[in-house]
Image (tube, rainbow, N blue to C red):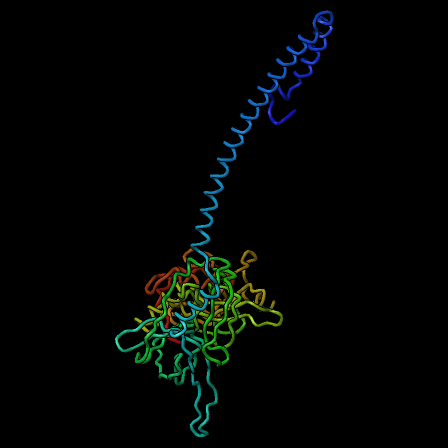
Length: 416
């Protein structure tokens, strides 16, 4: 069989041949030559006509099919071409342009923690980075990390042109690790544009600008490895994870001193504040930045009020069931808990509202407003995220094996 099922390619040809053989036998006594010529001519004409018709049909069908495909392919090609053209461009040029936009707004921060006046030497200073994010009248405001300015003595800011400015701490928040500084705005011409960190995409190219190791004005690049990574944090740095931080993960190099610097997209907008890196042996490309959307919520409140107001219960505690820092068997036995109680928070000390409500040493808190409290982390997250100052909080707890409930009026968390 051929490409099309017609007479020319079909098995009917063999039947014609068989009839021709029979007819040739019938007319053998006549003028075979004439009849043979006439009969051969008719068959040839039919064959030619069939061939021509078949060829025309084939050409028409082929043209129709391929024509449609060609138009569709052309449309797809144009569409893809337009998309590529719209998003094309040398990525290295885009890095250069983005860096040029943000670089003047990134500063170095020097925290003179302890100045020994008798010896007239600087015993200790911390180096970090910051981002100028707004100007108000004659002041410029800078975002940085809380751990950069922690234990503040005298603060200085060095701009990209090498000019040193005295800086003042406006407010800081240990929980979010964000701080805001202010300085004289004289000579400050560039303010960083803040981007929308919620629109970040996995694999997007980003650049980190800061003051690593005191070198000043250093740029690294990489990609977004994870857009919303949640990592555990020990606020007291005692090895017990009592908070969680949502961060952007990147493989752009973030070294000591880069903290507080800018993580920037290729449009030159700040989409994160560099905060930390994993520096264990054998680990590379694990840097983290606080998303810009979270940063700005905190920075705006710090600039307005000088602090972040949160609910305060007043308990110092340890986890009943912590695989990393487990309680000793004799300590657990002393609590005299029912066997059904596996998780909760053991009170070590009660002050403020908790003390006023009667909570004591070795009470085991298991619920807030009938919601399970399984650890110090869940206790803190509930207080900070689901309550506000002045709320009344119902606490379920065990004392010497018996379940109790008490209602506490939450106050404002005092400054540490």
